[in-house]
Image (tube, rainbow, N blue to C red; front, side, top):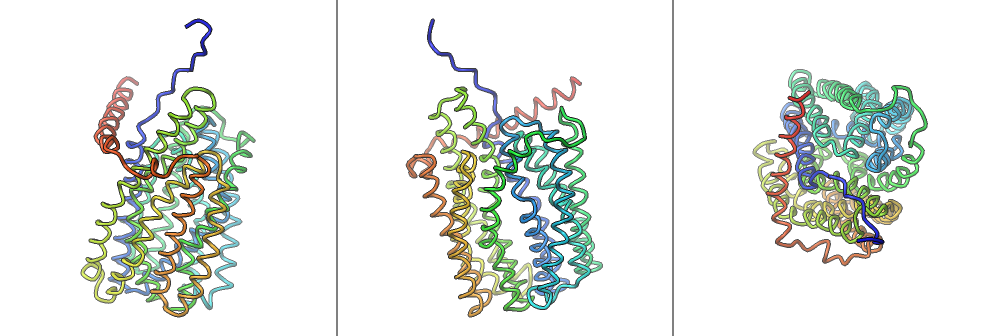
Length: 461
């Protein structure tokens, strides 16, 4: 109509549920590999071997988290809003090398200071090997973030499955022959190979030379630093239980508890797959709403639909984890009997946190990561009180109870901040509809269509 304002044609976006399905595959692979490795260590060395390996992985993971400065979140956010994936790759890999070296040195300093308490049972040589691959772990994290920002879910899955193969055939295989040192060596090799695969995938992206430049890196850092603060504090909730338990109990107790953490973490696979794709999609839709490509109501509706799917996934996830927990003594041996009870103490909080993580991703995607920082700060204070009260008194049982309460608190506070940022009734976001159930066959159809189109393009080249 003459004189009326015309909206731009909406850009074609990949089906969100299809992306979530691929992201779930990316989560399942490493979890299965880690589970197999855990069983191997439990059978070959016993609970103490699992405990030492869990402490080493926690040390490396926490070092990456601290010294990556939240850049992963900033990369996904900026790439989803138009930054060149190739340029982001070049700049982030240079930074992974620099920040990783600094982080490894600091991580070793932390190990050295706590080698007679938290890491009393961990050999110095093994800590050195794990910390040496911090740059590779950081580079892999950055590559995954960029691929998600560009909706390149297949590439994201490729990185995860590369890690899985390394853990299965490298770490688990070497553990059978060389016990804990073999597992650490296999984990290190897998990490380096995965970082190299990430570089190969991203070098194929168009644009930018292989020399670093300013680009949009400062913006990615500014956004990421806010998310980094929240993620850092969240690790108080997710992993400080292992470190504090390691200080008050032996490696055997840590090993039994770490299996409960690993198995209940399976309940996060489905919501985490959704979380990983809903963050860049929320940012993309928010930018589209600002430009007039879609209406704010359309943007809100798409986001709410994604959150409702995280609620739908609670029941199957909880049932599956319950079955896994019951099977623990049969698979791991009688020395892991207590893992069953510990897992059921953790499970309610784990399920609630799955939804809370998705809510937090939406808040960050709307450009308000500071609220996730506020939520993490509040919960971290509660969690530390719980840990230092319950763990010294009840060891692994205190850790499980404190962690479960912490997870529940995170979900409740995340819901409150979600309501503040989006001004959307919680029932709209949290109560599934019959239309949501129809999204699953639609997602499979969309995924098959996308894979067919990729095959056709390859033949045409």
